[in-house]
Image (cartoon, rainbow over all chains, first blue to last red):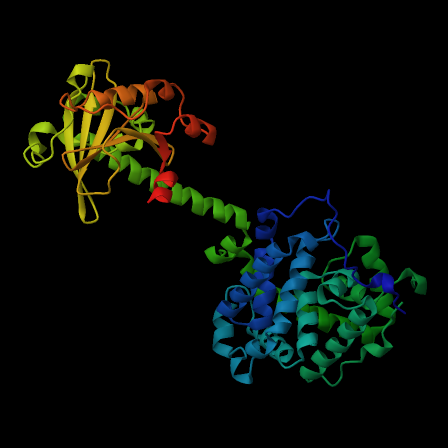
Length: 190
Length: 275
């Protein structure tokens, strides 16, 4: 199924490789903030998570492989930090998005009320998923990474990433209470 | 046309089709394949719709202004330290400049109107701003000042200096060529010896002697022999001669060998050892 070649090698940066510039990291901050906010759902804790990510990335900058995407490496650091502090950031049902808050934030970009309600249902369904499923669904929705890149971010094998994504979509469909939604087991998986 | 199974139309391609993220030829193939699998097509459409909703909901975050703390965290630590050093250097420079400007503005002597660079290269003993003679001579009349008039030096400024509980007076002399020497006078202090002696303290050469219960210390930007000659002629009534010959003063006390040939030249460390 998946060989060891699909694992992320723990190699050090070559000596002649270009070092990370501060501007390179700064350019990735909006994407990091978006993913952190999607995971945490609160501004300040999300920015705290991003700040810790940036500081750790700069301390460990020699571990970045220049032939990989810097954003993937930063996302991996952010995800690791998120898992480390998950008990502190764990949200209860009281922290779920309220309808009023949701309506004010998306009123300028959601055209119809039906779409807005559907978006709220989707986000609340994602909130009820496990951490790994929520992380992989949000990552796919926000960044659309390839299987290999997504696996590198989450620190799993490519096959694990694919199966986890499939299960997460199934869980999301269950949460959306759509009993008529077919399972992905019958989907064409080349 | 039904696509072959080995064309790798996976579920992600189906979602990408509903997200309009496929090229035209690829989209046609996927669309044809989805037409053959309506249940999967419906499921892919729902997942794509959910994915699009999440993406739209968090899209404005990309346009939000970045908090300054995140920008600072993304900067290299070296740059931040460079900024701190630059800030500290600017504070020190502004403080020093203000100190020098204040020193220049509070004196009316022509020698104080020189450029700041000439002050910076002057010996430490002359970096303080002496007060005019007329203003301070009354407060220091109890301490007689050496007379260097026979050597062409005249007293131009007197400044009392407080060092802890002890009082010290600084006498500044200048000759016609603008060369300056400084004498520090301190009553009831340690006994440096009655005759003039050379001392090397913190890299600054001084000549110290005692007269009438007052310790004098002479320093200036000149050779040891010149300083010695100046000190010998300071008090015309001084009957005693220096305890060493003038030949030893031709060489500055730089090494222990020099001190062996010139016993009168001592350093601060020697003085501490003897005491």
